[in-house]
Image (tube, rainbow, N blue to C red; front, side):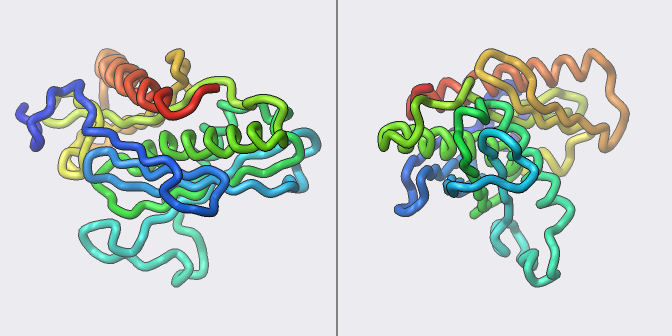
Length: 237
């Protein structure tokens, strides 16, 4: 099939990372993947939640601005509770980033990664993982430079990407127009070494075969490998 933007089936949308986009956070990154734009900031507090008995903690919050999409959506605060979608996504981001870190090396600190979607065009959760990782890494590097951390506590680069089956063809990095027509949708978070952290695959329009699953996974592996190479241009571990 011919993709809307003329990309090959295995081609990412253009990726742009802007570190230190805002002034005050310990780590910050604006990530643009195609027309999806997410502001990711990392804030550090010298305390941990009560359930953490040793080392530090990494958590995340996720939200979309009311006009991040084609129609205005109410803020979660207007409903006096977090939407189920936002809660699911921020748990995904937190799990993904914790898997990349030696939590004991963080000391008794909590790193909160805020991911605010300024513009959504598909793949906001995976863009948040990728941008959130860079914000976290930049915050860790700043603490190392200040002498507050002995070493970088991150074990590997981590990124996320989506893939899906549209008109029976596996495609990498779906934009909204493709995602809205996808029969099968997959979100994948991986390390730079190709290890899987999180794999979410759903037959939304029809069931899918093991062969199709492996085809989608191969696309995600390629996309995550390319994203990790981009991340490596901005920070070293």
